[in-house]
Amino acid sequence: MPRVRARAEQEQERERAAFAERFLREVCPLPVASPVPVPVPVPELEPARGGRGLKLVLSWLMVV
Image (cartoon, rainbow, N blue to C red; front, side):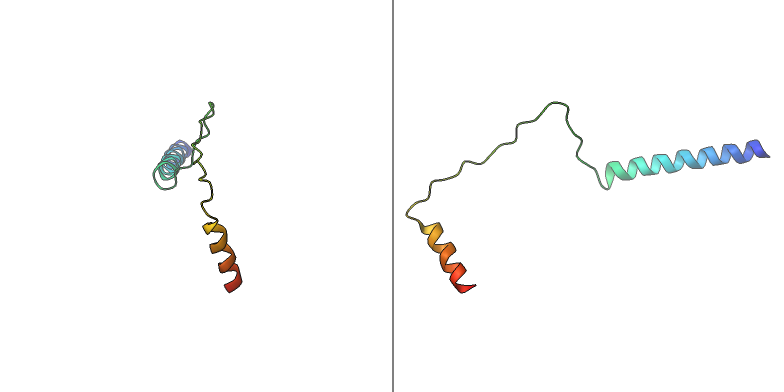
């Protein structure tokens, strides 16, 4: 009987591990760190034209 119990426990542990692996892969995948750094595109900043953005921010701050 101990062998049957040990085999059942091993099978249950394998099923748990498979479920956990499948859950992590399909439900909540985490980003994997790449050994090679990947360049991240940085958006170009547009120069301010006529200070409209600053005026908008200042007027919004006056309201708040």
